[in-house]
Length: 237
Image (tube, rainbow, N blue to C red; front, side, top):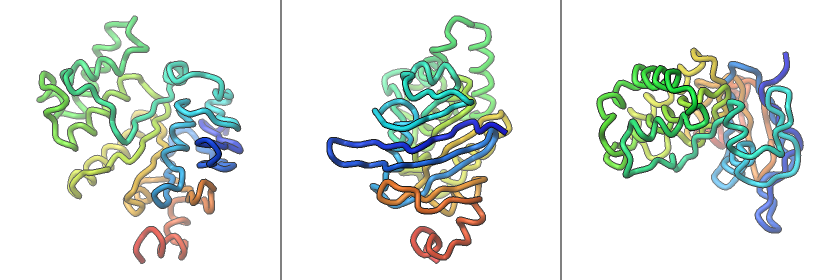
């Protein structure tokens, strides 16, 4: 089977400092793949480079095509969408308008866009209740739901999720990760960066460990969870 995403020998530098060094990663359609590692290891840089937000060397092959030279909007049009850890919502705009912006690349098909909006509201009833509220009035969990819903408006095949549980209460962390896992029902594949390594491994199919910009371990989520060094470093066991 052709991988949906394959990253080969990826390098990203900030000036003379190389933050990502020769990273290789692959994922099949329908999978959730998580990347875990310490703060500053290069996780967010890896996602940003894959999404086209940072200049890099190497190959980012999506659905059999090297998209390394494509800009962010072209990648989104191909079904490749990033939800950053900062969420990047428009606080002065309503929930509904933030969602509609997520469908910008599909704006020519108004009826399909309305259908997608209703689908997002069914998946996130809380957003439906708050559709006329400004995004800045939402709770942290609701803002994360809005960020996910906005991404789904683009009808992605691949979601890059950066720390979706960041700053949320434990109960909301469980709810957000339950929602993330449920997106497989829509045929969405997910590359997940998550500070809560145990929770990420619980919903992932495969996992990679990144340390000082390099991949140091990879395998099924179950294999990585059983790895003694991973358990000591990231799972508190």
